[in-house]
Image (tube, rainbow, N blue to C red; front, top):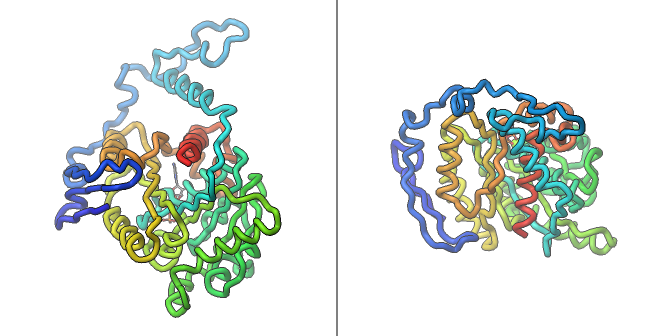
Length: 362
Ligand SMILES: Nc1ncnc2c1ncn2[C@@H]1O[C@H](COP(=O)(O)OP(=O)(O)OP(=O)(O)O)[C@@H](O)[C@H]1O
Ligand SMILES: [Mg+2]
């Protein structure tokens, strides 16, 4: 996987080779990020499609009519609601397959605020709710994943810091998520902020998380506990030793990409780092999954960023797209994922779809 940066542009050309598709090398010029004129948002685009204000008009108010029957599908909102009902129907009662071995995924993007933590906790919660055994490892000193999963992470709690620096067994720091069955979390505390520096002088500094997970998996087996189906590692927005530990521990990288201008900025650096890890520390690592987040359907910008990313990474990008949603952003302030905070919201539906797609790629 290579990316060339050209001075004066964000990414001039972007090429992907190998990966799942194995379809060889692709060279696609990127103009989106060099010409802001091409990405002006179109206000009220959703309305202009039909010229309608989008009100939901009851069709027939016959007794026993379901939502589908009472929605006027000729209005944009009616069509949107009908689409959502169909998406829910497709998901309902669908059992998710267990992977043949534990899938360890690192959620990474050194760009801040793109939805790494939100993606980690919601996909983890969706898979766990569907009956899979899931562990979330929070290696971001901000501790946002621990907060969203309602796991204690004040300074006195044993955390992933103790695992990485003091060789405390991972099993001693994991705690069950109180709101989601089958979901456990290794929390991050503020001590982790110093770990980047403390790790530098330690033996096998890049391998410490990997070894801790391997030992924990053996311990669970010895105790007769169920095998973990998924381990998700929520990374900080940097490419330091904590993130390197996550890349070495994982087989897969999941990159959330925000559907905004500059979305691909910094991606070249991330992919170069992953290449270095593949070369020197973990030959098994692949960028298996890309998830488009914070998609705002009212702008041309979001659609153009999504199209651009899909063109570059046709095999990796999930069909499911996460919309910009107030419910998703509110959930962490109640120490919840959107899956428990508002399971009927469109944000929860999108994360369920993304989780189902990830599970089906096992
Ligand atoms: N789909 C969404 N709709 C609305 N808000 C969102 C969405 N996804 C994430 N957010 C909000 O955006 C902010 C950044 O999200 P998040 O913390 O998941 O990003 P991050 O990549 O983990 O950030 P950091 O780089 O700081 O770790 C948070 O306030 C979150 O609630
Ligand atoms: Mg985060």
